[in-house]
Length: 284
Image (cartoon, rainbow, N blue to C red):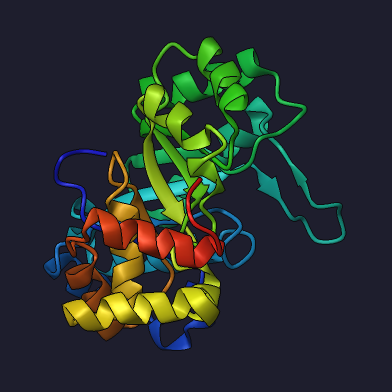
């Protein structure tokens, strides 16, 4: 990400579950308040809400207050198809991705997507054909930067070998209780390939705050006068490349707390103590 990337991104996956924000003016107020907090990255996907509903809600808010569209930075993802009555499947075909980009631009009401990610690796992907449509989207000014989500190194490298421009971003599941990418070579590969990491489910779906891991987080949090969630996000941010957590909450007070606490400075001992508590064993 650019040097001015905030300590976290705002995930829009649950927007359809928050009726209080469905009125365009109410959502526009919410977006503007987040921008005033210095949080301008909003993470979408075409399946959030089903059939682009959350992108549409977000776009209606931008259309009712046009100045916001110039201030927000939008990430969206495509490639998972959940058509009603059909088998859930992945689709990285040129026609589907080209259409997905155009549909996202229309729903969101922005002139360009700041980042476009392929949501899941598709075993049927023809890398050359997929690369052509992505290259065209950047050349035509529809997309500023490209990336992938949930790809393994060989999967993104196969796509990269066919692209004329570099992949810039990788969104992966990464948290204290999902730290495997740090030990199986996955995280090292994305760093080697200069992919900026974004971490989805950075708080482990709440499971992180239970049992031994939860007690360790509470201990560190009490020592620093912050919340356990803030400690968990700062643990992520201490990794090389400072992965950006994509948080799911839409509650303003919660967002403010996480924003303020994600930059907590943990000692190396604290970082490893949290890892040990979560994995249930000391490092080898």
